[in-house]
Image 1: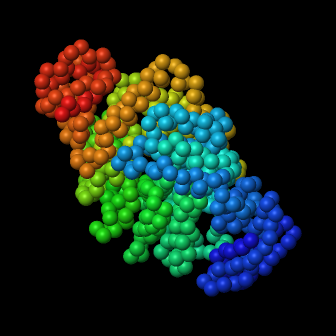
Image 2: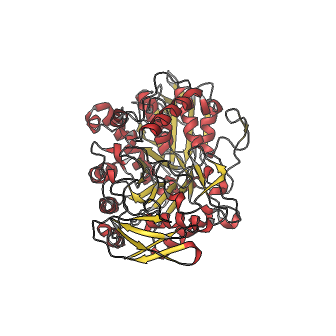
Image 3: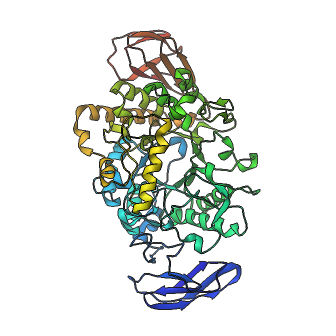
Length: 579
């Protein structure tokens, strides 16, 4: 078996297997290599210049956690995922037709494993989900956490199952016609178990992130760092057969060379997609409101496939909850909701009170299918002090309206686990750090929420009960109000898919509203959605033409009249064109 590692400053490198040590030979460019035989259950580490043995930066399996030995795996097999994915029949649908479902493996089920999640795929298929998006899997300290403090980027977290059961989960998704995306973190690594800096200049002190040292993408010896990250992306896509990646917080990825690291990454994924004839995508999370992320490289962009659009969430949340603290201070009423529905970006270069600067630019030259929108996601729920979902803040009528706004919008809609039935379990921030780091994290969370002025104590992330409270309660699905909301979501998704709403994504919807009378409507393709947010019935204008009422949150009584319709109080009506 061949072992290799990049350690450009080392004078010697040894492979450590139990009491056995094998010297690696120096190669060009700071690489080291040796041949050694290991039994299947033997772990290994590397010793640099005679120092304490540490895990492999490219470890494929940290069975005993971030401080344990590294283990090799059969990357060619991985439960037959490669062979299964090459079987005819499965190909991820393009993003313009996608319905994404964000899922945290540890809280999606009581067991918190890949196999338990696999047992719920029938539910997702019935709902109409096309893409499951898993929160980060790279091994992080302890057994519970969101995954954004991972340190072993190539090794899936042992708490959820083995590499083989992860591959089996993906294979099962593909068998159901569901693609699988993975959230990856390439802007920082967690502090605990972070040994990678001992091997080479993976980090830089020229930039800072809010979560730890910035990764060295453009300084001396950064070529190998970029290769490390791009190889990691390709590993998830090729070995495990993930169908795409969601890149965490790309605004904290600092790359100022002529060719941005994200452009390099996108090109590598595009090549793999072409070579394997698969629909692979790269989606960025960014709060920059910058269309250059997804513009074609020939037009000065980075060539990513899509990016999250947080303005949609903020406008929806501000309008329906009335909250104005923190970043919600930048959003104001129905006008911003209408703008978000039409353009995706609310901030297109105007002054932001929250940021105290001008923010964003117009989203010219990009399609609505390059924006992923959500009314709820792990960040926006979990970064509340009490982890409240909208279903814990609002009545059914506004929840139904929000679902229609999200799922019938021209953008790529994303749901967060349990949103489809109005789950009443919170999604809190939870960790399993060592005592000192855990204390610092808990204190930092409490300070972070000061600008929002939320009521109540912030749950201790280190408390195991904080994690347990965040698990979905699937028994809720049997309760009438939850079942009704699930069916509403299912019907909306079916309507979107049958009318191919996403295929009209290059055309903006026709949005009309009255802030004074509190109604809004939008027509997109063959679908017209009419919302009355007022506490009494009222007549709302609608476009001329022949429209059939196909879905209603409240019973109507034949109140259509040409180019207007009487909408019940707090009701949502969905029409389909007869043309």
